Image (cartoon, rainbow, N blue to C red):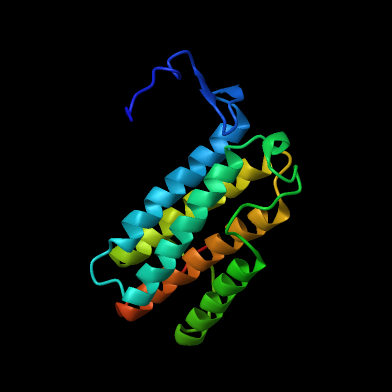
Length: 182
């Protein structure tokens, strides 16, 4: 299989199922941003000293985002069960797992008392960059129609998890939250 196909040289690409769209189409922007998020999570998982449980969780998220990207790269009319089809491998249980992880983190870090600026240790910085890309993915997904509600909920909760993870990594590194000064 060749890496290059030359089929995108004219500013169009194919969705799963073969439909051609412009590379500026909001659907392509959505799944491209999910791909960017996935790359950021790979960088976050490569943070030196990151605990194995967090790496395991991030790898699971990366796999789900790959499924989600494939789902977004498919015109809803081409989904096997129609536009109401949720993405393969993504369900409410994955949202609940992120919520559980957030709750666990919240029990380990000090209570949040103010708005927190991104920064601190390297892992926290990587988590916050991934969080901002996740928020952009959320906005891009909101711009397209026919997206199953579980997708929006999952991406929203993922950004919350990344925020909490950044706080946890700073806490474990002995770095206090960097509070916003008005």
